[in-house]
Length: 209
Image (cartoon, rainbow, N blue to C red):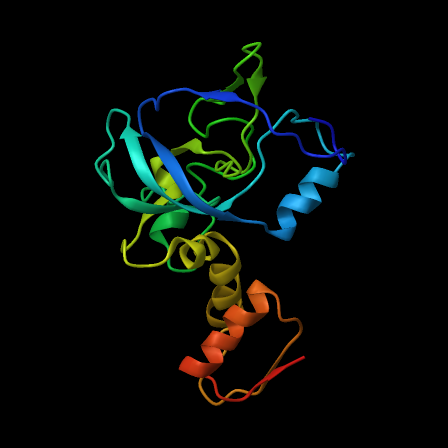
């Protein structure tokens, strides 16, 4: 509710999904340091109260109009970077920062409103990075959803939302590490361990520090 203050458990209302949106039952969510950073952040434009969390795995509970990419019952991972599939950046293999639905907008990416409210008062609650996974149910834009093999355990699948994809992407896409390269990785959190997985796959000469 307030930057830096303890989080509180509250009963909330989660509205049905609108067009291009999906309501997800969260099976597992993890804590990323980005959540901690935004929880502490005081010099930013206030977006409180809000529901934090952006690493999760869940099952589609309902869908809005014009949603064809996923269906009720699908196992999915919500992600904070959209993939509209139509903008120049989504169509390029040099960028994954969607310009059609840019990150960082308050509210839902297409209309700026929220699907959360306090059950007792009806007061709106802001969403976080288009995901808000610290809740039993959340509503996200379909451009922020990736369908997943239901055989992947939820406690591992949720890390694909941020930590694992960040680590693998850093080595594979950003640093463009090639087989045979010698690379130092600083840290053994989710990101560093994901880079370590790249080592086992293609890059045997990574030094983990």
